[in-house]
Length: 307
Length: 265
Image (cartoon, rainbow over all chains, first blue to last red; front, side, top):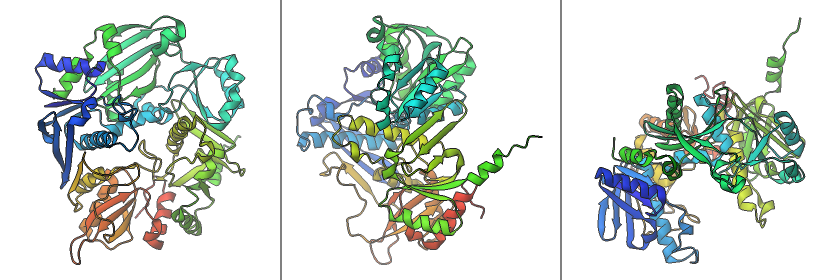
């Protein structure tokens, strides 16, 4: 039995559910928006985690879930809760439900895509970069500072420089322009991350278990995810093959970070240097699948089914 | 002939750091104890002063990471010159930004930045930063009790449900009722200090620290009845170091001086 967690209409979750249907796999849906009709009990005895999940009148022993696909959103922003006071009974129930389910999935011996603990490396990009480089990837020259003069020197040296958040918050990549220099003094109150721009082709690699899908992206935008906003035209995506060595590096990177499913952001330079910018632990793969037809959801479904 | 003195200079400049809150009595106690044991220069840096540093310069590339901090009191800390760190940072105090509309953003950015900084030391760091906590992973009690059982420690039954009347944002779950007598032991790398334990329990304590990847770990045991076996009651990467007494300081000093963080026995 596979457990699908989140809001069923969310594209990645919907695609995996359809893929499980095609396989005839058994699954149950933990629809976050229907939290009021659910309950969960977790027990840990002598190092064994078990319990029961009740949904819409059905009971599921937790030990029967051999796979979990977790796309749960922050419960505080659910439409059913967003206008309720912090102390409301509904908020408490939803919080406890999600929290208990998450605590169990962290201890589950099944295939959990993904456990929360390994996902946290993505919380700090330079922290993750220090892990990434151990797997043989180049990482862009990076400066984090609160000193505007160091930024000016960095830009003079590298010519084209981008800036982005250090954490996962407000994570839109922007080019540092002449106009930005006039407000550079603002960084004095909070260190800011700058990187030498790397010329080359963006490649998103999705790894799931031992499988891998690579997608090349063509765009004039600094951050291709926002190509329509930044350059007025959407990015062009196409399936590409990676050589065996690079494929192995990607698979080892995901495995090393403890991620069953990952979205690895690469840039391959004309000289064939491979830079890795970050590893996304909760990739919204539907964007890539819908543009290329790559069967990513089928691979996720197969992994969850134990193959 | 040119003689390269940089390796020698790097030894001369070597220093140790204690990173902690200014309210951390254990850190102050360790500062004096470690200094008396010859760890000098030893710099005590309070978390509260870090956000007011005059300059941060953190560089990361494919080969190395470096960081130079110029503190407001004039001290300059270069990671390359740090031989060992007693790291007890739990968060980045940003009270001076409270009320600012960008407070939450700044808080996330500082935490992410510190995580990277604390990961770029070359010498022993007790405890190393984790993506789940600046001084080692903060684990939920459900995870601790599970890990403790994997390590071979006697553990109580743990139960959590969606109907529980608890808000963990304001109250932590516990394995035993408040008031249950407990004793605490402290693991420092390969030694267990602070309590006399059976060899079996001692091995399990070391195993728990290893499984948790937390080389400096406080482990609580509950004594539920006279003569009853102790049971695992909780663990923390920020133990009260004073519970380990002078032997803990001796071993901590050796650990922070060792090239790989593991003292010769």
